[in-house]
Image 1 (cartoon, rainbow, N blue to C red):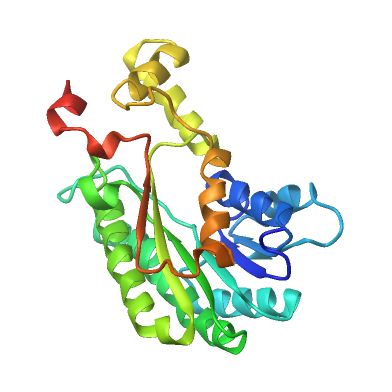
Image 2 (cartoon, helix red, strand yellow):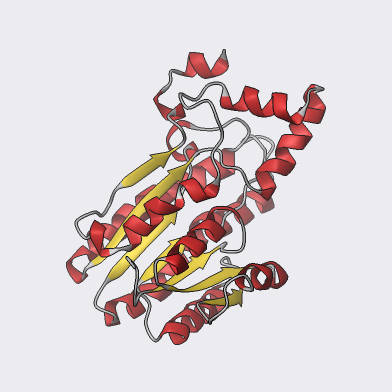
Amino acid sequence: MRLEGKVALITGGGTGIGAAVAEAFVNEGARVCIAGRRREELDRFAGRFPGGRIAVCAADVSRTEDVRRMVEDAAAFGGRLDVVVNNAAMGVPKTVVDTEMDVWQKVLDTNLTGPFLVMKLAIPHMLRAGGGSIINVASVGAIRGLPFAAAYCATKSGLLGLSRQVAVDYGPQKIRSNVVLPGAFRSEMFDRRLEETAGVAGVSVEERLKTMAAPSPLKRIAFPSEIAGLFVYLASDESAYTTASEFVCDAGVHALDASVLAG
């Protein structure tokens, strides 16, 4: 049990990568508090794990009081707080010109201010626990850009700098801060978008999936469970000498020349 005795808070923990990480953490002995805006979704996921290993907290990371309550609930659930995974995020498919100011602010509040608030309020608990691990979830879009994702990519790039700053400021107190940059992963949101784009292109879902996966060296789209092991490593004491680092998990797409992707 690589996480035995540890207590973790995961935002956006009811679906996708957050849910896969929560399951992996529980399987490795951790107690986990999952947070998100949809209580029913959280309860449905937590119900799969009897024995009180998972607690839920309905909260919006863009609201300070919600974050305060979420962090306090997580610390109370396990009596301490050792690991934070900032996974909650949103994206709006718009360019800079198309992005309305209220949309820009909403994405900023969720993707960058949200992790800032979580870390601001969680770090004092982690200091009392003698240190801990913060894992921020960015995106490959933070380092190479994505079409029609101006606000999303900008906030994810900002998260890289914020995470490094936390690593520098709190490393002496044994708090580590790292970033995972996922590419495309199968999830409910991804599958809905897959069906939509397949319909627009007039092809089957299977054909559309093959087209999307074709540029990657691995020639496929991953499932969230295939990245969860990295989070276990970063949360565990095995990564005690790892901080201010960025881990790209996108099947190697980031290594390709832009012309290959365009072709």
